[in-house]
Image 1 (cartoon, helix red, strand yellow):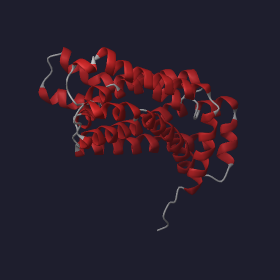
Image 2 (cartoon, rainbow, N blue to C red):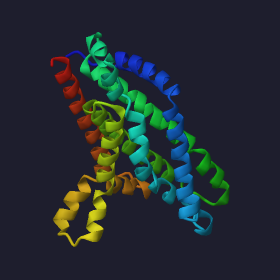
Image 3 (spheres, rainbow, N blue to C red):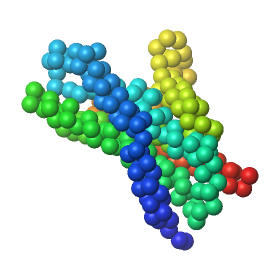
Image 4 (cartoon, helix red, strand yellow):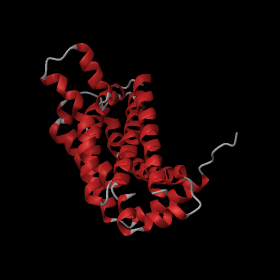
Length: 245
């Protein structure tokens, strides 16, 4: 059986990454991401009055800020191609559906990884103030990457289903808001345990919670990996349908 090597996908991803560098939305999203997380930690949670060597409040902001940041990153990927008509040209090139989808995914996820890299000065600047658990910080960043992977794949799927960037942004933001906050329903409603567990299963924030505590939960890990693959697979079906439409 011939193995799939994403060489063409990586080539497409490099082209997409260069386009991000010339997009004002890229820099606006980066600034918003850093400012929001910093305000969340130092102002809303009053970090310096906590008297605890933990960055858990900092990482708890990530699922919420992703609601706006991920749609900004992914809204242009497919929707703009469709609006300008270049998607037809892209579909005629010698790329498979997986090449196209993975190329878009690698570039968007690469941008998100760059945003996370920009957050490193915050924990590094606080290390001198206490005895931090480096294993916990590693788990928190690993969880942020897995969460971002699933959210990015969903954002790309909704971009492929949208006709323009505005529709892609709104659709992705609403969808992410729903699957991030859906677990909050159990705090307001007196639901049976089985129903609460069922609702929590679809919540990104719920699966990220164990990582924010410094624990690598195999269930959360599998959920993020499988949901990422599922969204990307559906994306390939959407592209295949458009190719033969």
